[in-house]
Image (cartoon, rainbow, N blue to C red):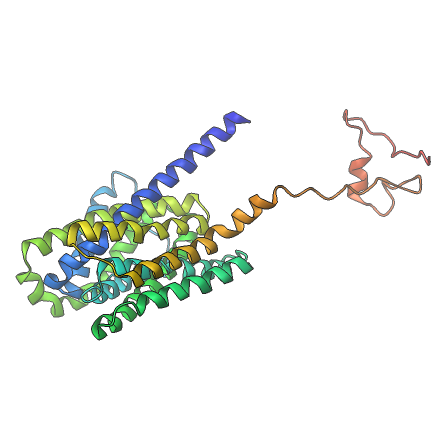
Length: 346
């Protein structure tokens, strides 16, 4: 039994490690966007980031055996590319022109609320009282974050970041059916290619920014394409394929903690107290949504199984009366021989 459990624990540990890579890479993206977006522009940064990521994944595709998606999966593939790649990146780049990296990361941390709601509706995952309460708490935290700064331009841009969090929350459950048939690398490659196709039409609006961007903006954009986009999404696909939606998305509430530290070290951004307190409320709410039921189950301890149905009724044989299969099974001898059900009426 221990031999069988060991590979399972190893796979679980690898999935958690992959999730940690996702946390670090996606946390660094918020600061990198603040560096690249002013120079390359909203659409220019989105296009460069997606092209770099898609090119890297396509180079690896033949060696790693990436297959073409089946025709029946194309609607899901397009949906993943639209929500998780094109729409998310355009909205986040736009919002971060004004919103600090740490603030944006706190708001995007609420994306699991959307993921869990979709998982409940589409995949039948149970929506419990703790998930409902946790969602309300997390939304209250988002409200604290959005009102923490008095600058009107920042406050209006925060709504754009909230829209980015919504489309990101839609993306995660959409990958779940695809990951039953494709690898994480394949799903990430499909999404990046679709994202490029959807953003190329906006090149005309971004051309002037792209050709005049500074080297710092280009380096940040290249980093975004390789690490958070290519590596991050591949690792995310690996994680969600091996962990439940609630467990895998729970890792995402660690992103703002790391993002705030990176933004402080890289950009010198200092969060205000309202953002920090709101961020803690968001993390507490999302943790309740994604981990609360499991913690409550552990506190309650294992549930005792229901007692078995007796094989006799008033001392008479139950097996064969009405064709009850449970009684038939109980009438089988434990050594494998057939015997009549007990007729002892004492």
